[in-house]
Length: 125
Image 1: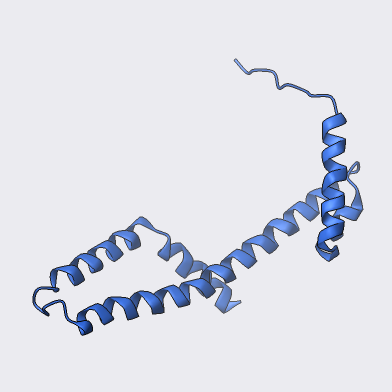
Image 2: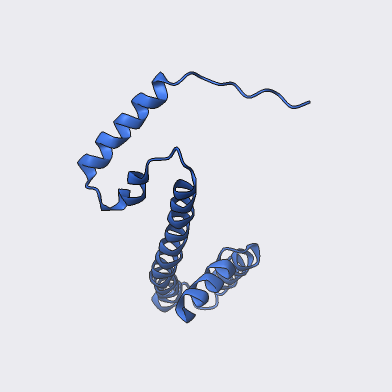
């Protein structure tokens, strides 16, 4: 639970405009130091290594938060399906189906949608 909270907090921070501006500033500072270091290999290695490490760690952070958000979304949809009397309870176990079964079910739902009468919403004035 602590790791999930940490990932969510870090993800919120990493996705903020302040963090983006900080990254731009750091790249600007690095670029401005180029003439001082004569654009040597060490100068280039600093930015390459830094961005590689940050990217590597962010992949795991993003995957963790995406998995968590996906699980939450599925639970909310499952609860809506469970609470709706006209919904098919079989839809609650879709994650256990294979790819072929999911495609067949998708085709079935597409056919149902195409045959249903189109209801246009009434404009609100």
